[in-house]
Image: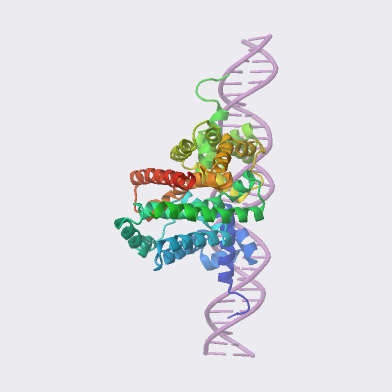
Length: 203
Length: 203
DNA sequence: AAATAATTTAAACAACCGTTTAAAACTATA
DNA sequence: TATAGTTTTAAACGGTTGTTTAAATTATTT
């Protein structure tokens, strides 16, 4: 077997991931992928049978990557304020490292909700993290405001992800370049941390 | 002139708007639009010259619609707590009436930020609303927390828009049907109102 | 080294894309 | 009612799409 450099299959998958994330499924052609991977166009189908199959494989990976770090943090045995701060930092770092990831997920699911969801396992995991107990206990003993996971989790995610989702709009709206946006995003991060803790933790 | 029913030009534009919002520019074919409008395929180019020109016209309308109601509310002469509540209600109603609108805007801009922005006029309008004065005054006399419009405005928008943007995910994640989601969204709306006012208004 | 298997290639496939054409059908004016 | 102008039509255009083919090349096994 040829072992110089990556295996062709992986090269194609990584190239396809980049192109799909940037242009979406509909905006990506087989030839785009082949060009990005610097490989012959027939190899996509040789290794993955079809553009659709390749896409589904990548989408599953991307969705798992999106949720896994969140689940990990939710399960940490740390106090709730620290956990919220870590969650938001984690989201912030993810959006900086993979700015196309969330808009890609949301848009592809929006266009065709049914075909894209994997087995329930991933979702069950979120429903049963240690964070849920922490929240329930805090609400029971009166140290935390009465709020469900369903409502709290999106509050943690939305503020950071939203400004990155609408990054071009915010840059234009508030006259910022990329450096200015970075500073802006950091400020936003601290606001949302303070705001949520303020609201959630009583006393 | 034939005056029974709508004019063909309007019929095509409205059909195109529906299809574009649902499937995006890349996912929409000229034949999709013709079929949705129940018209011959050549008429799209007869009235709008090209798919691209038709799209740009629609995109401009949609972007304006998105911002105009926000600007209107920001300019109202009402107290800041009421204004925040109205802003969030307005967003909520818009997301219910036009669930495809925001993800459409964000995704199209994400794919090609440069070509899609109209003249600066719309953006200048947001920069100079009455809300800005309200905020600055409140910060100056110590009744409001020190926060910029750039940071506050997205906080108002993100919570509601985000859960609708990720509606299929949230439905799946928390095991809700459409009725369940509606209740959930209403709860979220009240949380975000309380949370922002709590954070912003001192004392 | 010969034979077998795996990989890569250029070329082609039918189907579909956005767009154009030229004739038909329609409306308005004289 | 004849004529000019507008709107609609079916059919076709060249180009691109995802996918397949069969031959060429490379790697592995005998």
